Image 1 (cartoon, rainbow, N blue to C red):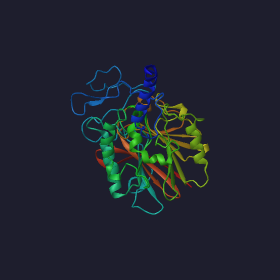
Image 2 (image 1 turned 180 degrees about the horizontal axis):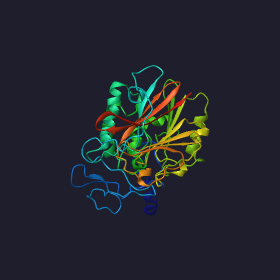
Image 3 (image 1 turned 60 degrees about the vertical axis):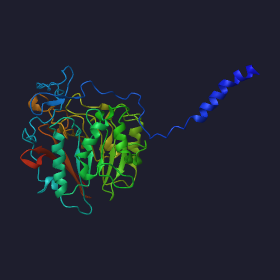
Image 4 (image 1 turned 30 degrees about the vertical axis):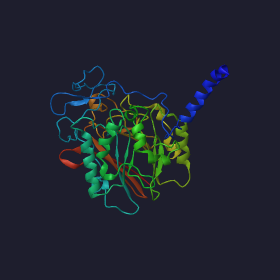
Length: 396
């Protein structure tokens, strides 16, 4: 009898343990962490002497020291973003490229009107961890536009929450745009459409804070999360396609990946919007030689996109290849100091029409049934609405 009890004891303990264990709560869809990048060692703020003496610490730079002045680099990959330096809005120099007439207001913004959608585009705007920050100046400029000529939404080309995508960066950054209601609500038309950048992925498991904040956009994503998604604006004028260009994307970032085949199918569906805007972080090509992601060189025009908007490089560049337009807009918060201009000994790549890195800024988009118009407005301390650096449009 005693030997039977001894044999049964482990089974009894196992049954008791199972009875006392509570079921695991369901978890929201999330990234697979395989291959998820870790933060680079320099992705942190450091403060130095003098007003505005702070910025990201580059490799081999002692913590607490301001970044050094980097010499022009003829290979086009020198330079990195730094904060505004004197506590004032920057000056939009060197002198911006001339813009053709775009109306009496910035890019022809006007009152809310049926059949017209107005919006702003910001990229690499989340660099708000040190003070003074250029990101605030961009947000104030956009808010000023919207107070006079209402904007329907804001979209981003990634790197929303420096340095590592954590909650500590998300909260103050989203407060800069609380006037537009940035957090999406299920069943309501969103006012803020982000795309993932590499800095948004460094904290913990691949963009947890980003995914939770923008979770409602997952309703328009095959993944159930806002890693990549489509949203059709009411009225049939604009379809937005946000992609995850990062190599850690479980559904891939190459032309034959699951993510790419999803985009091809969505763009090819009949009855789509008049204008189809694809946006993501790492550009497929750029004059900044180390900023491109060749994996993202997909046949967007062939699949039916109108334009591709990207970020990552802390500068502005418009490239036209085979009559299709690619824009890099990475100056939403970090003053551009990347050496991508001919004045710095760098020859623009094939198809590059405009390169600008003299200040921070944002793009304006205005859509009607006949035209999709874009302008880049650079922040300038003497011009609160900004200075027009570039404008272009698509017509039906």
